[in-house]
Length: 292
Length: 294
Image 1 (spheres, chains in turn purple, yellow):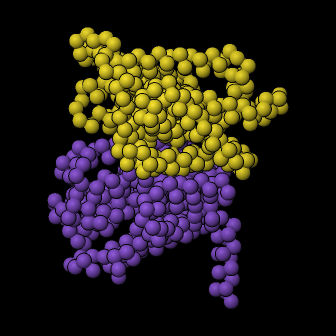
Image 2 (cartoon, rainbow over the protein chains, first blue to last red; image 1 turned 90 degrees about the vertical axis):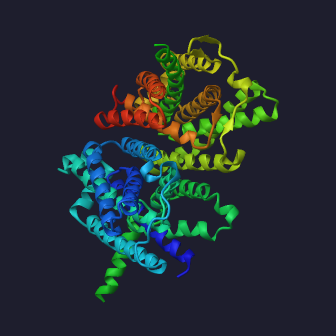
Image 3 (spheres, helix red, strand yellow; image 1 turned 180 degrees about the vertical axis):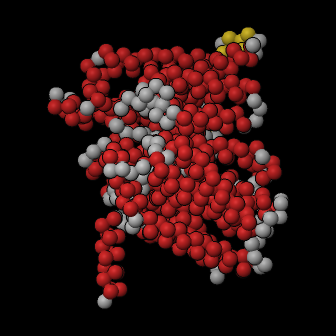
């Protein structure tokens, strides 16, 4: 497998997982940018465990998931039912705080970053295949869980919360509990993604976790369609692939291109490319074919 | 004690910038019903325009001020139809989507600044604008021209906006739209024109802030907008969204807190401490200290 294809496949998987991490809380109208801080914290934690404490990668990965989940849960106790803009600003604040903390901690390389992380398997080829299989297994598991969530009472409750919180409350939906559940789950996924993201490049640097990342994930869910999980699956490879096929001089402006696409979609097709109606239609057609 | 006084003075001038930004931000929120998260990025873009004009006009401050105001007003007016279109698409006020749109605008502005100006490196403003020597110096306390100007303009601009909102007919129209857009339409207030006036007014304010920020900091960078945007939104949330008086108190308090932390704690931890305090307030009072006025 060529390196370009490897990076395309792995980074696309990270984009899909992280965008699902934003998509799920957005089902209850929360833009949960804390996930990017979760990536950073869990990634650096795992990097430190593997490089300095010589802990096996699998243990460090589990620790990354746990750290993401725990931080997500604690924060969600406060902002489980907060307004969207409060959730946004809490997420941004965490990104700033965690970046500043890493900048000042020499054990994790401070502003220099962590380089030369060990491989997760014996050879470079095995290292790549292991991460690739791990990532796509994670995509399948997380996708399955989100699919089940969407087709459950919780998913329907989330739809009501998105449309009208007062109506949801009067129908007996516990908004705070639902908010906590989706926020904690997305933070947990982000924690694991952060660990794998660093091990793809075998390094961690603060430049990996900037506001550009927030912009990219936001573009993926709003361009793909924020009302269904399938929009992300379509938009993530398309947007990342776009930056690979463009000439380098144009590709360096990719954030401007993403921003322009985001604005165009918000104005012209507010629900994104894959709308809920379209997804429902496709699901019905596919299930009919299966029955035949 | 002298260090404390010096830091309080620094904090007041920085705080007055936050107050101005929060006022422009709240004005758009109250009248146009949008969370213009990219408003500080618009301000930073105007700083860059002012820098370009200063470079090519032999440091003409008057032209730089005019260019900053014009660019800020233009950017605000260009973005206005996008926000209006989104509102029309949804047939209702949707603050969340306007915030996402605004984040998109912010992404574009930041990246243009990163690629299109000074090779993405921070820019420095000339001494003619920033001021070379302090106006007053007592021990470690020194008062720079930028500090005095930002405080003075801050007080005048915020008082002016309070007067405009509470003592004039256009101000009553602004408040009527904020209170009840449909009711305001029924009594004959033109929603579109009044909305555009608020964009233009916050644009003028943005241009002034750009010049003051340039005088106060002496530099700018592409990432400055994101950092300031985050603080301004935090000031507005801590005060209570749309609460102008609350924004005044919280903006000054945040400026003083930041300056004190920078004065007494070394390294870049100072920023984190200011953010931690902000975070704690937001976690325990997510609807603001002074109440939401929407």
